[in-house]
Length: 436
Image (cartoon, rainbow, N blue to C red; front, top):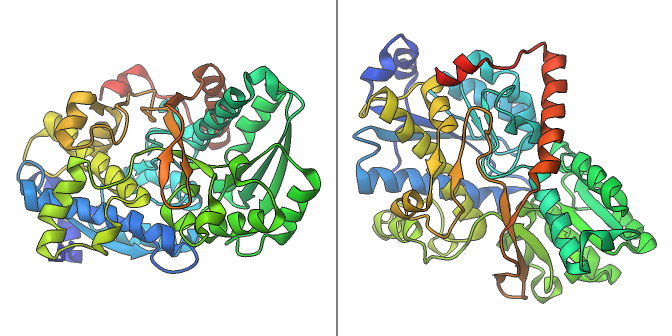
């Protein structure tokens, strides 16, 4: 059963004063890209988000009696289309956006404060937006590209026998030439100064189907490690080029958007040994996935193919939507159970998430992600990730959890946030604002 989105008339009512408290449907806009070169990765992510909403409605009847509705809008990963989708859907009662692209996030960050609609950018977006004192409406939950880069350098240091052993090593960053791909550079440059490794930056023009010149540079430079900051078709193309070039896949480490099934399945054994970060588990064992199978797919209501359920990116979509729903639930605890929450109230919910092990167990997410706790100043809530490795047929974890080094990250985040505030003529939030 496809959930019915708000009509324009309903959206107008929701926009009116007090209408949120009267309505009985919480509307979630879903920006997606099911078409174009990024579709193989964007589709399972989008399906997981939609199936979670269907499951909450089917299993629980919504959130404290409030039904969840949604409407998708196709962006094709293009920033201009993403902004168009945002402008169209925000008027339908939207109270939370997952832009699903760093470029779109950059474009919407200036709009969100005026519209009073929070942006949830789990594992992507602006690293500086972890600073809630400046970025009141941005929530890079569970990690940014700075935490990802930091954890990868920690892991390489451990492999070498200590971070001091990275001195004199060559590390190449093969990156998507976009805001997404450029985000980790400040952190990597900082770590390069600290540990004395040589950082080589090799951009790849989007969408990344042509990488021969990039891998010619890799062959010439012969780096000790390659960090892959890719998305969509860029990832599988990079692995094929590495294979053709003879660069060892076991020396390649991808960001968590370059470590899913679509990235390696067409390469198969050619990708064996390739490593990537992981924010979450995969597989159908978790109870949240079992509930989706039971309440959605077994009733013929699944958004995509059943055999996709539980894959890496599908599960990440589930997690993203679960955190959005929990922000609504948390807001209801303060502003009224059984009521539809406004964008400002959902923003408060995002800023006051407290998902410990017990709560994750209740949500069926035990073991899937680590606990997450946000605050007025900390809009990230968690800075942990693991490494998993492709064995030619499946992903298997090859490290324990790492936590990004706050002693390095916090000064960088604060400095970047202060620069942003200066450019935009913003002032830091007062303590009283954190209580409102």
